[in-house]
Image (tube, rainbow over all chains, first blue to last red):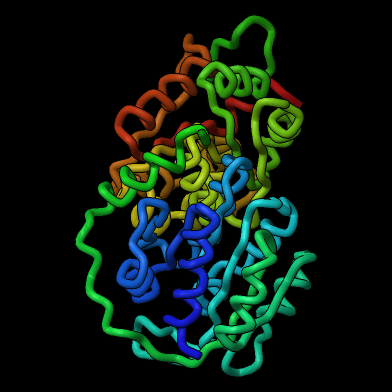
Length: 187
Length: 175
């Protein structure tokens, strides 16, 4: 499977459950925007490594809402401490999906350490996360997403991008549209 | 440096009062010896969510998420952590217009016993100037709590990160 297949499954889950969805830097954000642009999507355009941190802060602030973050292997490797902080907080409304395609997909598919053996599911567990799941096909990802709203899912994928267009919204427009629902009390 | 404290408060109590009075309700922290009294106060406050983090850059991301969730976020940190946060402050907070209050123990200045603190101590105000991040310093005759309130007001009105720099002499009146 490719990253886009996983993004499709996760976006579908977010849409069905009304979850707030944090998209990761680079092509993954463009792909999410292309397949499923929603008000509940926040597109993180800079600050590589911090998508999972933004999602954590949001989940802790809004225990009344479900929050999902889409991460990549390269960006998790840049901020591995996030796995320890998420474990120490253990929010029941926060799902982190790491799409591990073994490559820095937005910069020319240079191999990441996971292509040489770093096991992100084992790292997540070792960091103290109790609920860690692994998927390697769209079907088993969909099956896990059916019953899981919290914890970490590591999805094994092959490298490769789609040619999703650039997001035309400005950063301030992205934030304003997102905060119209993320910062409001649930009805 | 003489600072006028509210009543007989310690420096930490005074900063804590400022945090409460400013309405800060979400705090991430990376420890500094000078924050050792303040961090437990924040941790024990029932109306503040406190998240100890592994690195200040991560803290900037978590605080940005908290702001999106409607919180008023602050980070307790040592100034050395500014170096760990620069891309996040620029490419997340400044890019999107996200407020953040950074309450910094400013090491590497007058009275610093550890030589390794000096380079970042001297660079801190210059880095903040370069990034166009406003910063506030305790002044003789002003209440540190007021400084915190004023700093958060600027952060939230201008939608950007701001810093309060609290140097070694500020903390001296507590053991």
